[in-house]
Image 1 (cartoon, rainbow, N blue to C red):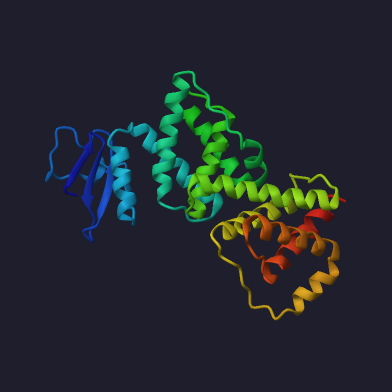
Image 2: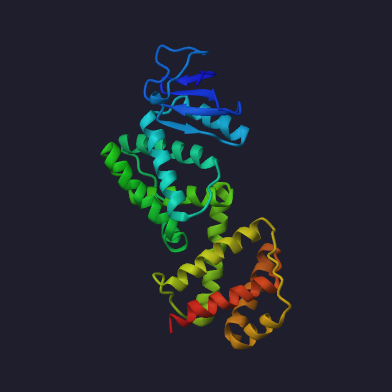
Length: 279
């Protein structure tokens, strides 16, 4: 590989076989090197190929002043998250998570802790991402012998949710708020306390996450059903149907969002199941 640009002693830009830019990392890979020099394969630890040019440029800017160990840890966490979640993550996760880890480590060295006021809701609604956040804290402890507070597991979880949905952090706060509002309507309609460890609550939360995402982005869900199934579900779970109508009215008033018949049907099913497990 031939160096096209040097970001720091550990990171350079080269071209791949298709003459597309790639970010190449390796300890001391650019030490006493210059543009045009050749890099040997055995010197390379990691290679990043980011499809979006703007994302790639931002990543390059960040890596120019980032410790190699933080970059490597961020990559390890992202790889683990992709395997655990079984979903694609937006390339922006390389920027947001790497920057967050570096900032969190610097804060803790200075004795500064930032409270995560969404931590309780993150545990409830984004349990997979929160689990990965805690795993990331273990990886930080192993690599740097620094124990980050539990709040940071929540922050890492939010970055993962952002990357799953291509959302900004502010929108994720709004998304969590909508999930909480819908959950409260269900709770007070049925006068129950949720068993938040149940698989049914997990499925309900997962459905709410994507439902709230569609609401925020004004993307209405449409299925190919002819209406018979909806009528059957409505009759079978009449109390859940009444609850969903309350939710639909609330969302129409508060967010000017019309819940489609198909979305109502899936909400009825999830709500009926999660309520039954609490009886």
